[in-house]
Length: 289
Image (cartoon, rainbow, N blue to C red; front, top):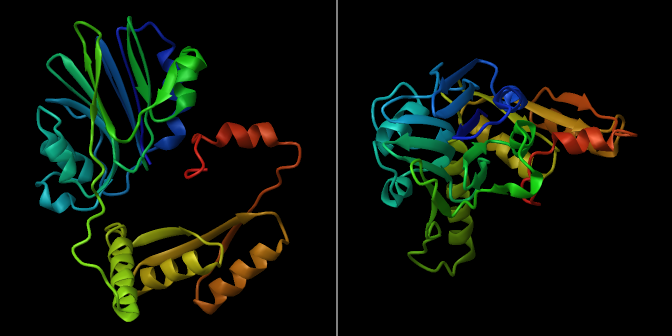
């Protein structure tokens, strides 16, 4: 989880916006400061590669699962930068297997894009006076922008901002991720296909270090994922967060014991702290909540 913040041709409280995102990456913070301000907070998972990149100017929060097929960069962010080159196209984005949000600046165009499912967040402001964007809405609020002027970038849109005219264009991306070559009518064949797809999805998300933190409720979903991670040799640390002494915690602990895992618990008391909890929630739609 990295954080990005940028602004073009706007007089804002950039320091406050940058500080609001510091929790997203504590390994390094770098800022490109010119007519375009671009800050990146690094959370290093795969090598310590600091951003923004140059030529073209680029900052991203990403996990690219097919990064090895994209080039020889030091990590997936560097390979994504090289893959996109000087121009972001839908064809290049369609070649990616992963989740991402990025800002790409070349010549007179700033391009903003997200993965097509919208896993990685990106918010923006656009007006006659300029453009601002950030990984979290609250950063733009801290910068001094009114709440009703801030929008979440639609995952199926690519934004292209002209730095000379300040005009913004939206390019639509087709949603064609789901393809079906054949219809499976046999129940066993369908179950095998589903298990194969799940195994592949889990395997490609294991980082090179093999260290994996797993949100663990002890339910069927997290238990299956834990078992598949173990099959692939991952070093799993399961985490449970909840109210002390709850039935859910006991269930999670029993399931972790059955799987041979050492459960790490974080107890949360939300009594009288609804506003504090709400402030921590960056997403505004039910899927990410």
